[in-house]
Image (cartoon, rainbow, N blue to C red; front, top):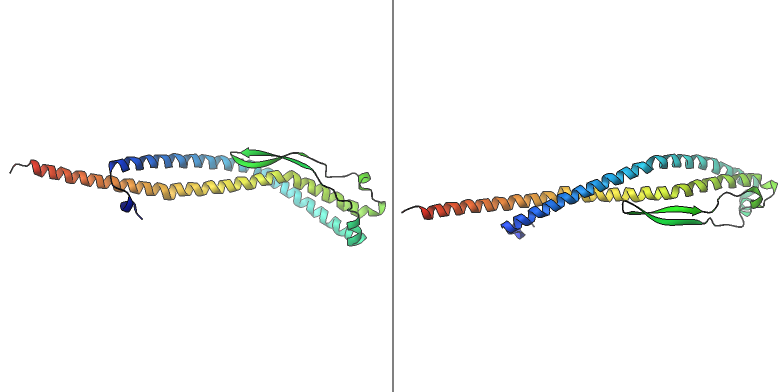
Length: 206
């Protein structure tokens, strides 16, 4: 449905439409600034994240061959036996906000790596212990990167959402309002010209 079908071409509606256009332009500017700030925060996290991912990939390249060696030496059942008893790594997480975007921060965490004594294994488990150490290092890196990765994902989603909002304001709502204002103003001008001609005819002596 076009504006001509549901908007009366009056001066009140012209003023109202101009006010709405000003609000939309102001809103678009605020969204644009927010998006620029979010992109800036995203770039701040991007470089450390790339370094962390490279380090994780490198450590994974060390851990999995060590696991294969342990499996070849001890077998699947023997390797699994050295993993008992299982344990839980405790993390303390607190909520935080980046430009109004909710994220999480790890403020405290329990140790991941264990000493040889705490493993309670024999010397025969050398390959298993080596694999365990490699994977503990890998887990430690993953935990360190987890909060940053979540922040990157949240900020990326927020940037995409702001982009969609800005596109809607600039490419749909703003052009629609400008078209409405142009049509109402044109209609009012035409009416004013017609009224002027009518009055001129009435004033003309007969």
